[in-house]
Length: 486
Image 1 (cartoon, rainbow, N blue to C red):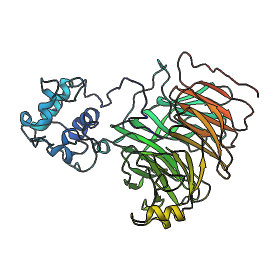
Image 2 (image 1 turned 135 degrees about the vertical axis):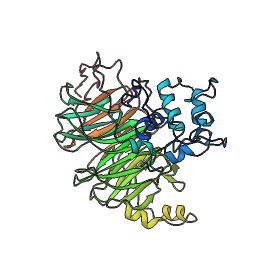
Image 3 (image 1 turned 60 degrees about the horizontal axis):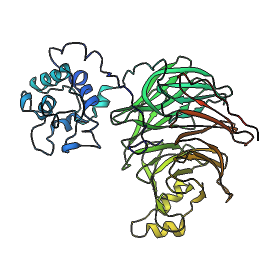
Image 4 (image 1 turned 180 degrees about the horizontal axis):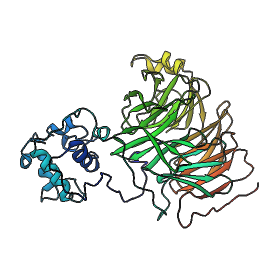
C-alpha cells in the first residue's frame, strides 16, 4: 500500500495523546526514561528528528542518537545541566522560530518539567539499549476507542473479503469495519486499533491481521478478532506507520512492512520475531509471499522489488524491472502493488504503463555488475509485460487466475489479461484516487476503496455495474445501491 507525502491521506484528525496519565499526574520523584521521557519524544519530536528525517542534523529515534549533538555542535543533552542542554532550551525558548516542536504548540508544563528533571537527574536510562528505537522500548500502544460516528468519511486504504466472500473488511479511523457484501449493512466494528489502517488480510472466519499506525511516529501489525470486536495480539511494532502485511501460504507466519523501509517476519502463534530486514532505500509499499512459500517480496518507492528467503530473511535478489532504460517497456517508477503469480513468481505494478510478471530465480540469474546489467536484462529478460491502459500511478491490484484488476490515481478499475495481448477493459470507476482493491475468494467480486471513503463492489463477470456506499458510520452511510443491469 502506498502512502508518502504525495499519496498521503488528505484528512485532518484530532490526535489523542496516548502516554498514560502523564498529562494529568505530577512528575515522578525520579523520571523513568521509558515510561516518562520516551513517550514525549516519540509523540512530539521524532517526526522531525527521526531516523529518516533529521532537521538540524539531529536525531532522537534512539537514546544514542539523542545524546549526540546536531549540526550546531552544541550539547543536546548535558547530564545534570538542563539549562545548557539544547533539547530543553529549545522547548522553553520564547523565540517562536527556535522553539520546539517547530511550528506547533508549546509542550505542556508537565512534559517540559519531566524533560528538565530527567536531564538534571543525570539523563539516566538504566537497562536501556541505547541503539534500540524508542518505539520498540515502549512496546505496543493502547489506542483510543474509535468514534461512535464520523464527521466525514475518511479516505480508505485497506479492503479484504472474508474467506466465504460474504463480508468485506475495510479500514476505518482506529477500527476495522465489517460490511455485508450483498446489502451494504454494517455487520461489526472492531476498534481500539491504530489511527490509520493501511492493510488488512483475513486469517480465518474470525481473525484478521492488520497493519497501520501514525506516519513518522508509530506503526504496528496486529491480530484482530471480529467476534470480540478488538485487537487480540500485537505481532510487531515500528517507528513509522506499518504500510503492508502478508500471511504465508501455510498460515504460520506474518510479514509486515514499514514506511521506514524495514520488513519484519513473525511467527503468528507466538508473535516471536523470526527475522528483520532493512534493505530498501525508501518506503515499503507492498508485500507478498510467493505461492509456494519460498520467498517474501517487498515493493518500494525506490523503484525496485526486494526478494527475501522466507525462512531467514536473507536477501535473495533485487528485481530491477521497474527501473530500466532499454526497450519498449522502459521507464523508472515506484512499485506500489504486488501479488503472487501462483508459483514462485510475482506480479508487480506501480508507475509506468505495464504490469510485470516475473520469477525471482530468473531475476537473480540476470543480475550482474552495473556495467552490463541493463543490456543483459534487456536481451535475456524473462519478464512478461501486460499494458493496463491507466493514466497516472497504479496503487492497487487484485489477481483472479490469469486476470489482473488494477486501479489507482485515475479512479478507473481496469481488467487485464496477463496471459495474452488482449486490450484492457474498464470494469469500474470512482471519482477520485483508488487506494485498495480486493477480489473475493471465488473470483466473482471485486471491492475497491479510495480517497472518498466509498466501498464499491463489482461483479467480475460484468453483468452489472455493482453497488457502492460510504463505508463509514456517518449520517449518510446508509447503503445507496446503484446497480444497473446491462
